[in-house]
Image 1: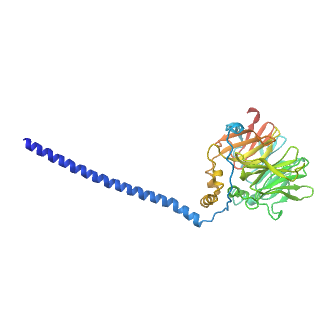
Image 2: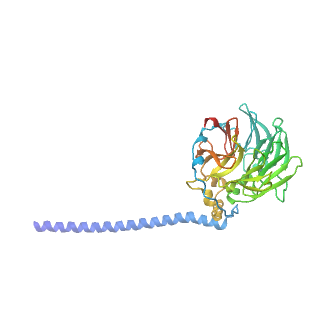
Image 3: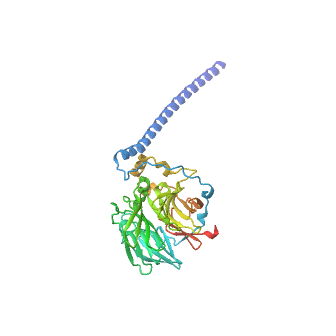
Length: 415
């Protein structure tokens, strides 16, 4: 009995050993198979991603010819630049009735603005009326924009008429009552060997004789302004138009995206935003430094758009986007890497590429000496984003945006 029992035990142990060895072999086969599948999957994934990139890099034509440049490290968002949510207190008005109200002008209690559908609008007693249209229909697509027109900078002159900078057509004077449109400077005019491809903003002397305006580029139109920023093209200009002599003079050239313009209260200098380089330049139009220019504010925390006077004697600056610090700034990272800019715009359209840029609302108030007085933020652009202009009137700050479907108004007395 004992021998039989022992024999059975030995046979059972042998069966278990064989079974264990079989399982080890199966496990090794499964492991080897899984490893092979992983390697094949990884290789397929790499090929799927890398081959199109290499193909694009070698075969596709880039729409831009970027030049390398660099920024200083973005200023830290501390002190008067410290992030807050004050712009979220703004009220969004006429939602869906306005398309990209870029610039705002006031005549008494009446508001004027220009929109992406080519209209110059008047808002009176809460009602919206069309004053004029410089271009012609149809509007609404990228292809239509050059003929539709795009009113950008707006100002009310000393005679109560509107002065308008249209990106595609030039400078105009518009009667706000009759809607009569008078061309002052055609964008087709060749000025010092260059046509104007992107007329942007303007500022007018108190007597109405001189108009200072910007042509952002002689190469890129407004519809391609993202290419202008990323490429770093240095062909923007600040110009002066004399309404008496009808002559145009170039005051500054080789600017990287010349944008917002603002005369000083004493009219002894004019400020011009150089958007691509995140700075504001100053051109002296009178005094001992007449004809000279210098830096008013270098290394802004974002890309500046329009500049407008503040009641403190300083200036409001609308910021189109933020250069995050602390954090990652894609603009700063891309600036010295033209090869990467080329690759991105070989693969993506302007609109698709900009979807990777986080939304942010930012307005700065600068003192007369160029220092920051205060800043209003809307992190993530919940209420306000891509501010093109901050126009102060009657204790309120009217916030324009080239992309918003509404006009935002902030009560300064409640801050």
